[in-house]
Amino acid sequence: MFELLAVNAAILIVLVLVQWAISVSINDVSFIDAFWGAGMGLLALASWLHVRGGPGDLATLIFAMTALWGFRLGGYLFLRWRREGEDKRYKLILKKAREKGQFARAALTNVWLMQAVLLFMVSSPAQVGILASGAPAPIPPLAWAGFALWCIGVFFEWVGDWQLARFKADPANHGKVLDTGLWRYTRHPNYFGDFAAWWGIWIACAAAGWHYAAATVIGPLFLSFTLTKWSGVTLLEKGLDKSKGDKYADYKRRTSAFLPMPPRS
Image 1 (cartoon, one colour):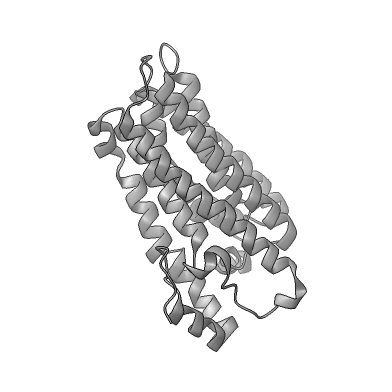
Image 2 (image 1 turned 45 degrees about the horizontal axis):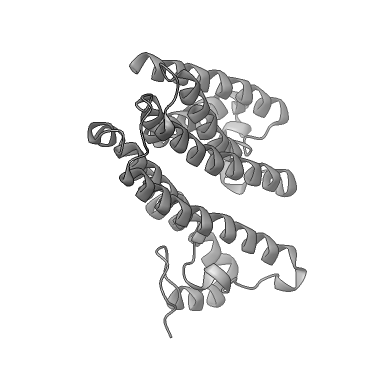
């Protein structure tokens, strides 16, 4: 299995270098967000194609879960980048490098290579679960439990993104706070969706063997930390606190930050 994971790592590095070259040519790395999801889908596809003896039903289930999540997210974020242009976060990260004429080097080391390591780590349950599931056998009940959690996550992410896109598309909503639909129960249904989807994939990986799950639990644990404490909820809400002021403060008092909960009165 280790040699097949090494092949996946090599594929990822090649894809990252090609996209880094494109980002230097257009002076913008923001489309890396689209690759975050699509790259995980591609690694799952590579794993599925590399299964010795051909993939079993469990491998195909894990591949389908990862690919549907990843390619949908990748397409959504790519279209958002095309519509909105360079992301403010990456402008800030690369501001000093641009001023010093070191954009290419900083884009590679501070953005693309770092993201590649994190992408490989977070998607490790899918890669390992697929590669370990070559034998033809019925899908275990534990995997179906993971699939059920994944379905909940996909529902929150896909519907949450759709509701947010519709809200932003209406000029009458400028300056307002979205507090209806899924956004009534959690301030970040799309982040919660990511969280549930990847814990579901990890549970499906556990169905291939608990030692595989133990070896890859760092993936969903790190993703959970990222979504709740690092670049997800925490970073996004700093900007929303400034841009929306009292409206967002009132929304925060009423609405759960992450886990879906009934709104407080």
